[in-house]
Length: 144
Image (tube, rainbow, N blue to C red):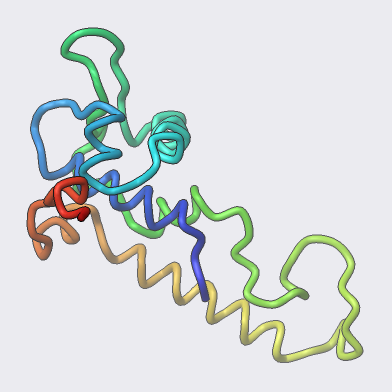
């Protein structure tokens, strides 16, 4: 299973927010994580809409975690960010041209595998991820 960049970037944003106590600006997150500001803005908006982060405007404002890291599950973040978790065409909504349908064991096997992947991620909280991760170093400073 291959995840899109939104899942990866959203998890990185949450990890960075979990490493600091003070609110982070979009610019700071963008520079530190080496991500485009437009990506960070869009992802922070989705994370805020889902109740994972809080955004505050103005001086002293920024983005911070709304929930403790122990309550944020990696699987939930991936489900939030992924548009299509179907690993094969027959798992997508709508008609599918497959000569084995409607009775095909492969469809069930792939559905089970996708669910096992997400179940595995559900065992990891943001707190777990933070324990085994070094503090983020600014990728802006690493550029030549």
